[in-house]
Length: 531
Image (cartoon, rainbow, N blue to C red; front, side):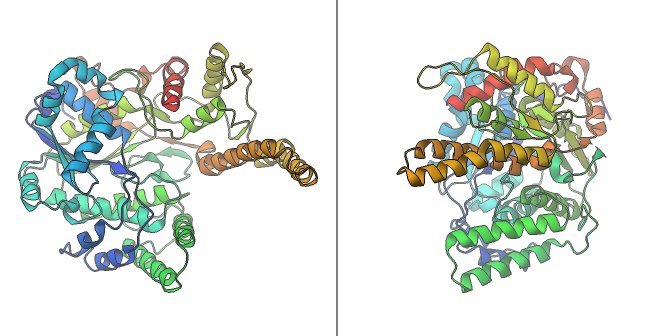
């Protein structure tokens, strides 16, 4: 690989299309029609009636992916002479897009450094460099209704970064297929029409590997590949299955909540049938297969980050938004909701700061521009700088000892270590003694004493459900015994010129885990929680 000099300069005068909205709606009244039409055009790429129904498929509960925000901020900060950033946001009109962008993106603290740099000229700078596009990747031409705009983008776009996904582990199968699979195909189709395109960068997840143990290589999926050697995995067949199930449910006129449950169960059944633990990673793997199979020589990089955490350095340490993976455990403890957990403290916890992922994205885009190849990158820490869950527990204990929790009534909470059980039998024994038996006693007492202790019962019941929900959600990852090979990324790191490595750092060995967790990430999580 050639030496990478002047990474920022490589983005000068470039047009970049960025997708990354999430929050897909469960109101899919006409999704069965949408999927049926799409099945007949999936491989022919013919125009169809998708967009006639697209606005019926989405809610307004949408957020821009945190990783995309960090990437956009970085590009604008280090290369103010970028020609244009097209940001695809799901919305019905330009006015709604602008309102969402100001409230959900540039209005955030993340852009503080950029605002300080440009001062009063910040708004005009953003207006000049950022073009907001109302659309949706689940539609042909990304759901962009303005024909002139579509044609302009086909002429101008040099780089496409696709981070759009639904990340709900147990998403409705129709919804997950619509975004993570069909959406990827639409982005690819759009990319093929871009006359100047240098690269399509698709952000996936390292956990498309499922529950594999040992070293997991940076290699693409083959169409129809499964994790358990089951046969018969076919994207078209899965789409037909979704359409048929929806048709059955609506013929039977089932209640919306029952339809939602049925579609969630279908996704989980199909994922586990082929060896994946949940619908999210299964459909992300299918999306990768579609891209790899149909790219037809298009320059493609698939980036697979592990668990993304708060920023290490840029634009400042500790920025994050929303809660995910280990953050939920930190907040659960801070709020007195988490009293124990199930997992192996000695296993590797593969987390990576968001700014390191954004830096890797920029380096990858430069390194692979105009190369008619497909490359997969793992962006994680389990090989280069591993850290286990015990370190997180120790750092959390230290942080809360030095910064005690305080209840609403002003009373200071004692900091203690929560028990973590490495086997299911011990965990269930604890849950019975700590929750199930007291709950049953309270239920009987409340029945006899006119619900005298109903508040106590409700509080204990909430804590029980919270712990069980987290265990159900994260059990595959709490016992995950794989580590993600990052040889491709290591080659890229070595190719970055020495003078560039500080500005575009994505070397996990630069992370001091105890300092980062105790002094950066945990405070960042709690700051986000207080918002």
